[in-house]
Amino acid sequence: MIDEKIITKAIIESYFEKLMDFIQMDVAIVGAGPAGLTCAYYLAREGVKVGIFERKASIGGGIWGGGAMFNEIVVQEEARGVLDELGIRYRPYREKGYYLLDAVEFACALGLKAIESGARVFNLWSAVDVKVKGEDERVAGLVLSWTPVELSGLHVDPITVEAEFVVDGTGHDAEIAKVVSRKLKKRLFTPTGDVPGERPMWADLGEKATEEKTGEVYPGLIVVGMAAVACYGEHRMGPVFGGMLLSGKKAARLILEKLGR
Image (cartoon, rainbow, N blue to C red; front, side, top):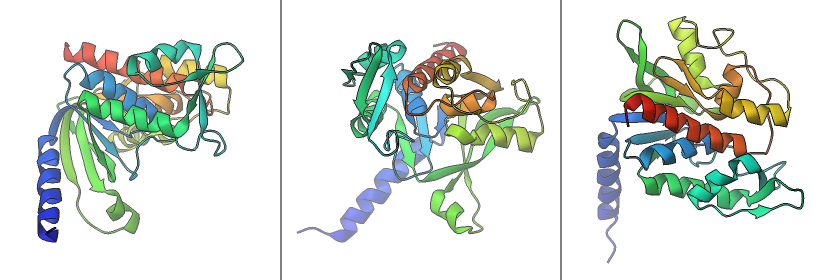
């Protein structure tokens, strides 16, 4: 006989054990898109304690819809090695240097690889602010609220988690970098000192910039993927995802170096 009370107790006990374990972590990633998940995979496989906080119920960011709701995406030659390292299936297109992936399979596989490596995903949590510490007001964690609370406009105080580094993987809006710029009123390590936003599409330049601009934009804050593009005013790139993978891998490498791993 199935007892509803036991089901409820099991869910609540298990979840809060998991959440309590991630009140303090090495790296907190905001956004479970392709760059954030890739970063989490490469960090967690090296033993780094990584928590991913995703606003939506689902992970994968913009992967699912492919291009124009055609659930196929493209990865270029430069990023094929990342797919091989993660063991994600792809197939060559007839034009050399382009590879196709089923968008749904890619989103599922990328999430599974990150979780299997040891990262933990907390969906339906919104990062509404950052925690800072020290004379330089270094980013040292996140202020979190349940997404339904934010959407409903309820006046409910958030909670806080601590991390050595925070990764902004919030995509086009670069939400965490904007919070730091706006609320601390300090210049980011960007040419304008703030977040100018992305420029119109130019896939070749956009893909290169996604990896190139990945890095620390404020003490303790790393930007990846489209958040890096937005912070540096670079071009967007559309449904080609190689730059996202390379950005996530680069961010992980930079953080590992800073953590002395």
